[in-house]
Length: 139
Image (cartoon, rainbow, N blue to C red):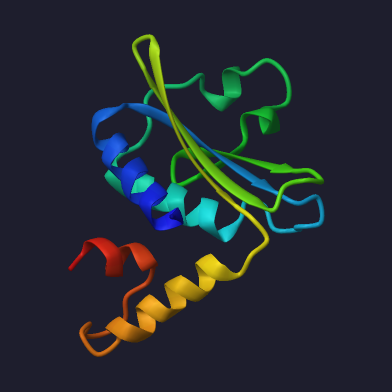
């Protein structure tokens, strides 16, 4: 379902001018942002740069509070006990918001399903493709 989140967020970015990514994980996860959140931000950055925000130099308070800038997208990493992994994209325009979120549990089942899909499709796809979304949505 993470691939569906990425596809939906990419579609949203074509039509909604502002967004940010929230990356949730267990307190023990050291990488910030996660690879999933970083890849999502880079993909959204290829669609366009999110709408205007207050320039970093004009912020009042610690600039880090606005999150990391990854390919023009603000990414906020939350590391707390109780989370496994979750990725969220919040898009906003003119008085409305769209939130797209994917939460994972601690089961390996989603990873097994994605791996099996890739193995089944390996003979159909020439070259190297990165990302399960390419297998699901690019034919």
